[in-house]
Amino acid sequence: MKTQYHILNGDSLKEQFPKTIKGEILVARECLVDGDVKSKDVEELFQVRAKFISSFYGDYTVEEYYSGTVAEFEKIRNIPTNSTINLWFEDDLFCQVNFWFVSYLLHNFVKDPQVFLVRPKVHTQYGFAGLDQSELETALSEKTQLTELDKIAHLWEAYKNDDIESLLLSAEALKDSLPFIYTAAEAHIARIPSANNLGRPKEALLEIMDELNTKDFAPVFREFNRRESIYGFGDLQVKRLYDDILAS
Image 1 (tube, rainbow, N blue to C red):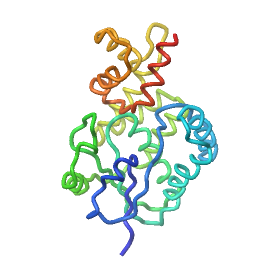
Image 2 (image 1 turned 90 degrees about the vertical axis):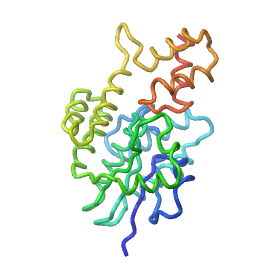
Image 3 (image 1 turned 180 degrees about the vertical axis):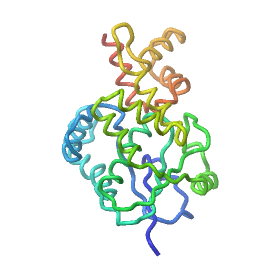
Image 4 (image 1 turned 120 degrees about the vertical axis):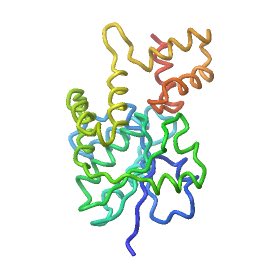
């Protein structure tokens, strides 16, 4: 019997993953939504990301990035021909950008993959973390086959190259079958600063700090996650934005 592959959106899902679900588990251990991704190929991307992660994400070294993150992506690139692959990703922008990149890897490096998307039925700030074992099994049983992997892969290329027009056109082309992609693409575009706007996430943080009358990070972060769950940011991503605001 062929091995079934499950590519998960993080280690937290791996920890709660039902033992009843068979197959090899791989983890997309990245936050491509944050920081530089400009690169000519995958190898250069890993170099760029290792530098960024080791600089801005605490004690995570370049070596740890390669052993903990790149090693998983290499396993994805080496999935055998004609394998069944389940992608466990949510609708928020954090998950979506990782999903676009994984789709790019599968489209360009894996021959004849049978790819399916598994996602929570309803988008919430809790995502898979809000589901119990039975609900995760149900999510798998309701998976959707991805028949346009090339178009999803192109989303990553547009995102990586900061080609907003191409990103939106690609998302629009998938709108009928995968409407949440368009919503995520719009959220990404909304976070880009302009002359009179800091971008949606920072503007939201300013509004929250004003409404709560506090600069205490913890309550601001909780409220940001409630209002702006479309971004799926963790505390590290929000803290970077928050610190930028306080420093300006």
